[in-house]
Structure formats: structure tokens, C-alpha cells
Image 1 (cartoon, one colour):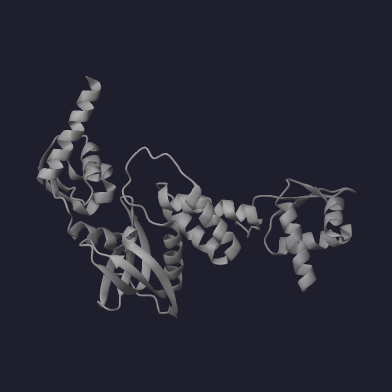
Image 2 (cartoon, one colour; image 1 turned 180 degrees about the vertical axis):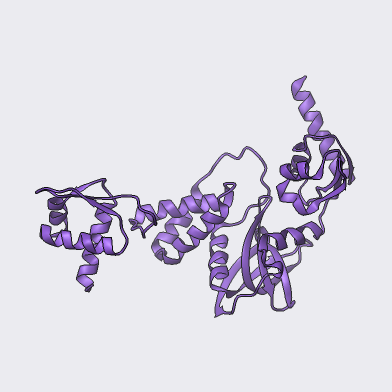
Length: 319
């Protein structure tokens, strides 16, 4: 298609997305062409995979319908900003769709004009919401989007990282996957300086800069990024130690603690051991509160004090 024709067809597609049905005459007026030209452009859109219904008769109506595949969508500036803000919010908070939202956000922000990206950032930072539970540290959605693109393109990236011992370092890695675990985002990457796989918590990551250098994709050990991350997390040191001996079969406990599957160990047919250790006291309390069975607890004094204080507040509220 020529440049003028391409522009006209894209304009036609944009019009079809704004109203349920258009007459051929109305479209011809909007585009400044004949009804016959509209019919030809409709056929071009069909050839590109857009499902379009047409009504017979002199008026000749057209409308986009649902098909077996999702064709590309055209968004106005305001619509693109709204979608980007919604995806950033979903990527940082809604359970179950974070990864899908992140992939969509990466695609959108890659082509978002700089003037609109500034609007998205301004709107995101000016919004507030009510949080009914302590979710712990959250990842910056803009950082998530940057790392998602780097993972997809296998592009080496550098960033500042603060370790659990509060040491600040500059890292250079080959990013592989982003994994959400227990409300925390992790970057699974190959650290070229350490010559080994490493996990990086995104709430400790800042100033991520793509280098422009792309490398071949590395195979994750075991070919399962989520399982690899879960295995690393299960053996990672934590600030607080909490080991619960649960009086229930391991498969039943697993169904209630899927995020801690690698920290479950069967003792016998009716008992298992759950390692609920964590850096965050409320998250430990939440894990233990979710158990529907009796258990004995071997934990650090800070955890016992936190559980007693939580129980005291609950009993006081009911008195």
C-alpha cells in the first residue's frame, strides 16, 4: 500500500474502533473518499485479519466483530496513557495477572512516545489507593517494564543493587526472567562478574540501564525458571527463622501454601515440616495464620513476640 493509502486505512480502522457500526456513506465523508474506496479499504483490512461484518443495501453498514485471533489495536493518546497506567498498577499489585500485565506493559512502553510516557509517570505518582493489608516492599512498575524488555531481548543491563547486608554495588548481568514470589519480584539473571546465576530483589534494585548489547539466551538450569527461583529462595538466608511442625499430610498443607512448596518436608503420613522463615514478620504471621491444622513452632524470639502481640490485639478487640 502507498503511504497515503496506509494512512487512510489506519484512519478507517481507528474510526471502526470508536463506534459499534458505521455506514459506508459516513465513513466516506470522514475519510474524504468515495463509498467504493471505503469498500476496497474494508477488504484490505479483512486481508490483514480484521473481522469485519457488512450490511447489504444502499447505506452499507460496517462493524468490527470478535474473531479467533486478536488483531492489532489503535489507541488514541488518552487511551494509551490510561492503558499504561492500568497495566503498571496491575503489574505491581493484582494477584494472578502480574506477569501478563508486565508483558503487555513492556510491549506498550516500547512504542509509547516520550511525551505520553511522561504523562503516565506523572499520573502514576499522583494516584493513591487504600491498602487493607501490609504487602511488604513493592517493585517500581517502570523498573519492571525496563527489565521485562531486557529479558525479552536478551540485552545486558546494569543497575545499582543493595544487598540484604545493605552493601551497595553496581551489577552487570544477562537478564533471563522476572518471577513473582510471595508478593516480591525477583530478577533471575546470569551475573557475568560472578560467572553464576543470581537472584535480585527488585525493591533493592535502582537505576537500571540497558547497554544495547544483546547476547544469546542462556538455558536456565532445569529449564524451569520458577522452580529454579523457588529452589534458591528455599535455601536463601532469612532474617527470622520459623519452623512449624504441622499435624497434617504434606499434600494438604501444600494446597494452602503453594508459594512455599520447596519449604515443605514430609515427616510421615500425617505430619510435615514447614519452613516459614522470612525477612518480614507480618508475612510469617500470615503464613502461620493460614494453617488450618495444629502445629508446634520452633522460631526466633522476635517471631514469638510478634505473634503474641498480634494475638493480644485480637483478643482485646473481642473483649
